[in-house]
Amino acid sequence: MGQAGCQTTSQNEITYVRSDIVRLRRDVEDIKNKLDTPAPKTNTQGIMRNQAAQRETLLELKEGQQRAESRTEETRYELAALRQEITNLKLNLIRQMESLRAETKAAAAAPARTPRTAAPKPVKTPPKSAAPPKAPPKPPAAKKAPPPPAPKPPRLEGAIDFTKLYDTAYEDYQRQNYSLARTGFEEYLRMFAETDLADNAQYWIGECYYAEGKYEEATAAFRRVIERYPTGNKAPRAMLKAGHALLQLGRKDQASAMFQQVIDTYPLSSEADQAKSRLKKLKD
Image (cartoon, rainbow, N blue to C red; front, side, top):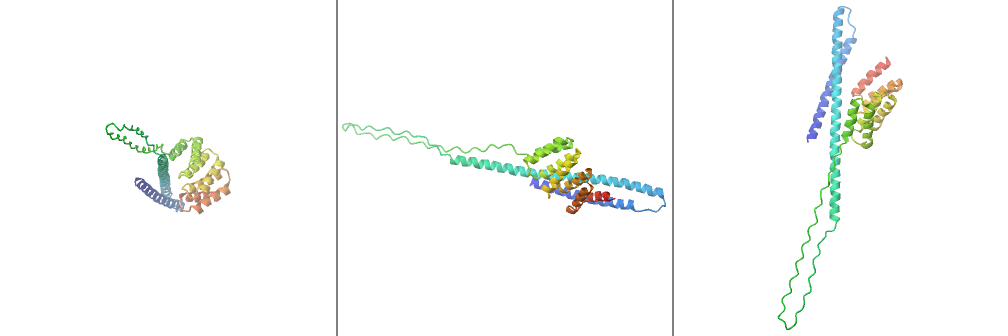
């Protein structure tokens, strides 16, 4: 329940942040429209001061939008890490149950050992003239076999932490150790390709190549995100960055097609807005 509550809180934060972003974008568009509207030639100094103030406001709004988008990205990462933690717990529980079941079956199949009882000694028959024979002593009662020992509980191994390798690689990326970070993300994909953070790992491989100026490799890495994880949260961002990488390679037509694909596939995303802006600049 604690994890579900945490996830609900994070989703609410994403909703609030997205609403802030929409409001900021609307304000930016209003200011742009005002700046683009031709003003009369009277009171030139007042108009210039007004435009300068509006530009400063525009810059502040853009900075606020960037902070809001950064916060959204962080919240998305926290949600993905939370989902991964739940997956880890489930996998560990399954492993423990399987180990306990196997040891229980092994203990039940083992035959119980019963201790051997000493055979009674033969009783000598006395001669007829002798006194009446005494009753032979009763053989000692056989001791009950001790119950088989209860199976020992399985030895619990250390919990599998799939996020540790991912976090280490991401920290290397933030320190601009791009080659080392890329190796870490590739190792994560080799070991945990079916986890919730796999699409993120593939995306950051592309970002590492892009930061190193290896735009051909970056384009291929971003395309893998689109092809393998089309419903993942990194797909629109990977599509947008693939367009930027193609621009760096001088492939303007392919980049334009990639930007248009972002708009067509994810029309309500912030990446679609950025793709529209980039297309407009390419056409001008």
